[in-house]
Length: 501
Image (tube, rainbow, N blue to C red; front, top):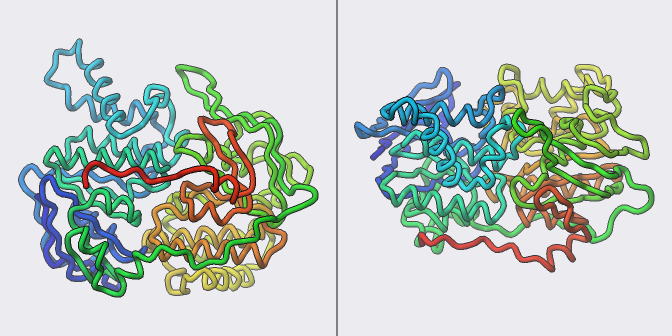
């Protein structure tokens, strides 16, 4: 069991969490919900004894003698060594579990444990992924590798911070079933999540946080069906507050054209593996194209090809009829500015040592030749328009929440004045309030800027409904494309129920 009593974490004269108490009970799942910046991650990390630099901490955190705590972070790339293959990352852990076996059996036993853990983490075709590096996996695949690490460690308490971020409905269902199975083995699970379907399917108890404090808690069914606090009712309200675009947009010559695109991954054991094939796909001015599909279907690989981040591909990507170089290193400043990428993992995309405002302004200075003062003023105005006050903009990335950083990442891309904005799961892992705000910003951008086009990589159907057209990927292939209302109208995307509740 793990217990937090009256926890207060203060940094820079500001309380991140204040008066938090919770009990993680063996075999039970406790969910923390709240808007970005409400203190959920700080509370979860307290169970591991980790706090922000120079934090002043009061209160108690108690673990039982065998209380090894496993942590599944919201941003998995941050804890996966980019220089080591997946097999090395997992085998190091597994070897420690088989030291008691005769030397001749250790290698096979360790590999068996690795494959078993990856299977439990719902990672299909695990053997084909072991020789890849973390950057060659999708965000959802990275998340499941980290889950496998926690399972290999034999943790008695698991803190799962947005474990279903950026994953499709079927994969979410698998993660739900797996976490339910973890709890069934007598392990305490603390779930930090914005995904209310996951919370509803899994949690025994829900704790609602706002601005670092608990505003309401109770059994899941009672709290979600009959919330007593106004903030809880606002969190549970999922109706979008943005005006969806007209069903038709973009005519004439496409801004971006994809012709005969095939992308590959290279590994030492199998050589070249084809991971994406797009015969033809167009994007017109003022248009939003949503790219949907299961985790690992090739969505992020497509996005990275567009941005020049994945150069192992054949075929053509044309901007206004001119082929774009495969690598961003070969693109000039105008081409770099024209196609901007907003990453799913916003935290990993920022330099942790420099203030956010400086990094955002740097985009306009480097790509557009703007003067420092003008770029800084534009950065301030853009951040304010996205709902990020200047006081937060002067902080370093580690002092911002995931939702705040996502808005900062969007602002940085906008300062390039792009023709094409590629957004890779930028609403994943955000609470309903912040998600509505981001989608509202995107719809406003499309309405106000006729020269801007949007490629939206997403699993979320509310986000996909923002699009004029949808392209569906499956196992690396483009299997369907067409107007959003037709594609969504002919497909069913239920969230499969878990057997837990």
